[in-house]
Amino acid sequence: MSFWIKKQGLSDKAKFLKSWSQRPGPFEILESVPEGLLIPPDWEDVFASKGKERTARAIDRLEGAVGVELRETIQFLRSHLQTVELLREGGTVSLLYSISSGKGKNRYWIGGLPIGMTHQASVSFTESLAISGGSTLDWAKVPASLKRLYGLHNGFRYFTHGFGFPRISEIFCFGDQDLGIIEALDLDVPLDLSQTYDFFSNGAGGCLGVDLTHCEDDKAVLWWAKDAPTYDVNFWDVVDEWILMNLSEAE
Image (cartoon, rainbow, N blue to C red; front, side, top):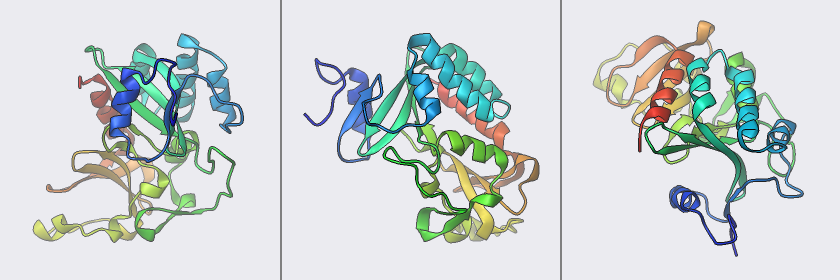
């Protein structure tokens, strides 16, 4: 049997999530940590408990990383996070957060292992990280708040759509993209595109880009595929609002 959820077979949740999975290979949702599986100490502490205590511990760790930045999201999770489980998907391991929307539907978010760690071993961490398109990201220049988030989860997103924080390997540099909107709207872009990276996507043609040469006070650009960008927005204010909208909407 290539995957396991419960003795009677796949649960409805597992069937739904597996239908959206883009990774080949085994797919399993686990309520406890299998022997020999390497996970961070913080995750071990979460899975040392069950039920409401487990969800509370998971939220505490998210709050410890970005509680100030995602204050509205954290508050919502306190009353709506239902379960925290392990998701093993095609050779990767994530935390699976099942969240009630408050409208009778659930949202499923996944958080990857911390940056610099796999489910088999800790790996050598360098300041130059490989990203999409063969480019690299200078980790030393990344804002501290984003480092804290990625130190908890390398990728934290809504499972069924490209909404959320991408894994480091999925981040793209604006300078590597064919940004046709610049020519289409004859834009004068006040960014160093070679140092601007997408750290959050709304899955619907919009993303938040951070120019690492000009990112003080959480400054970001709200970039759209077909509309003019909005400059000098607060990265975390927009992210907190977008996540809250995603969590509170019904499917």
